[in-house]
Length: 181
Image (tube, rainbow, N blue to C red; front, side, top):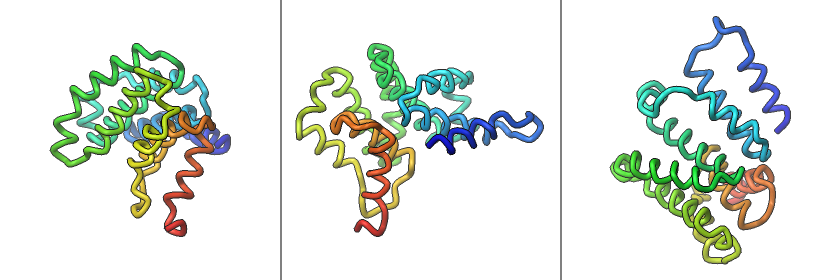
């Protein structure tokens, strides 16, 4: 994890002529995720460096990227106990992306958002077997999952297991690998 963070930070520090905005935004989002995996408050700073509107990111980076960014922002706020702000962002997320996600049949993203909302409204829910089962139900072990999807799921699952997010992510990577099936 430390090596990945160092490599990403070095790439972001490269002179401006050698970078394009798409690469920079991708690297910043990855860096924010890596910091979140380490429970490092630097994630807040990285997320604050995104200074364009959601519409701008949707047009330039694509809907999937914008949705990842929005979910990561919610997770970061929740991770560092900005619960009210996280709930507010979650409400905005559902309002902005629900129609799109239903159109493209990505119900799982909305299910995830609802689980995050349940957690934010009642943190004791993580102690219930039913909640953990719902989180695990989001995974598709027969398919190769996107690393961001695994990271998001790992964040919520780490709360139920009371383990670090990074270790939970590694466990999910193993769980989701073809050799596990």
